[in-house]
Image 1 (cartoon, rainbow, N blue to C red):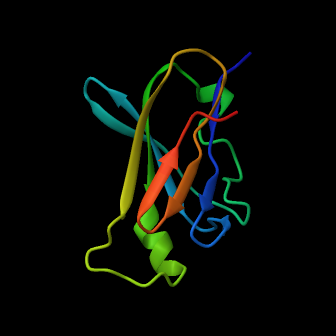
Image 2 (image 1 turned 90 degrees about the vertical axis):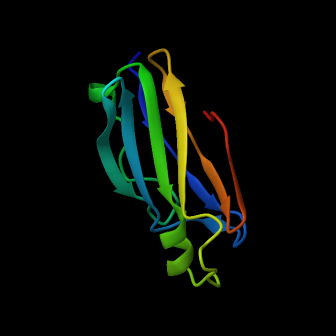
Length: 117
């Protein structure tokens, strides 16, 4: 079985998928953080392709960066200056070749994540 990475972003304040949210994936190595992919969520709050496909999978430390502030601005969420949540980094490890799913449940004042299936 090959490993791969997916995500799903739900806007819990509006009760809908978070469409149009930019996500970046970085691999963390001794010599720094390296951008592997940048995608935007679709109408279902998912990316149209795997964030890290099987052909590129390797175990290690990764970071997903969710651009929540820009998404909240685009949805008309009343702005603060500065926004409480702007960029949300989630650093995690992938230790075996399997399906890793890292969803984000988002509101203007909080978020949660977990290893999904």
